[in-house]
Image (cartoon, rainbow, N blue to C red; front, side, top):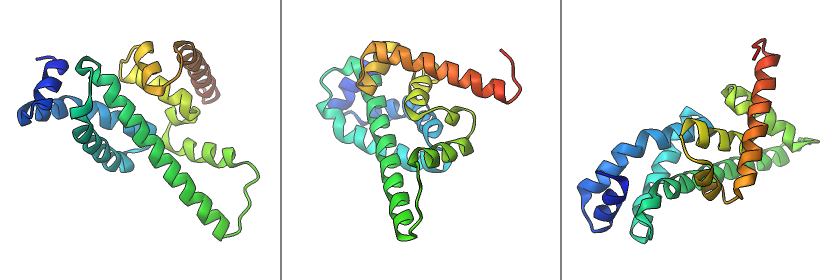
Length: 174
């Protein structure tokens, strides 16, 4: 049974169809979130995503576009979590009266803790994860990230280059 048919059936109130959609997409969504954040936060954010899916599914007008719609929700949830955590970190820094001359350095330092993928800037990492690890087309990535197809292609190119440079710096040769 296709995702499109399951979406239509779920929109008509069939709980088994919704359960099948969740069963099919639970792991890919969790994997995407885990790669964008980390395993500790992936469970919470994934739950938020599925709540948003259940609430928004009746309003999905194009059931055939379920996958990009689902990953767009996942992306928004990840971005919201990152914004919330960044704001919390900024509040803590202000309270402690610490001055960070370049806030980008703090983001980069934190990204290095979660592995090779997170050595990439968030936008490049996101495109790389969606395209290569979630097997979404360039067009779907563009729709999810709300950017032109050309931007997706340039981010993919930059992400590959940065990842290659990072791995070369660690002693791996291409």
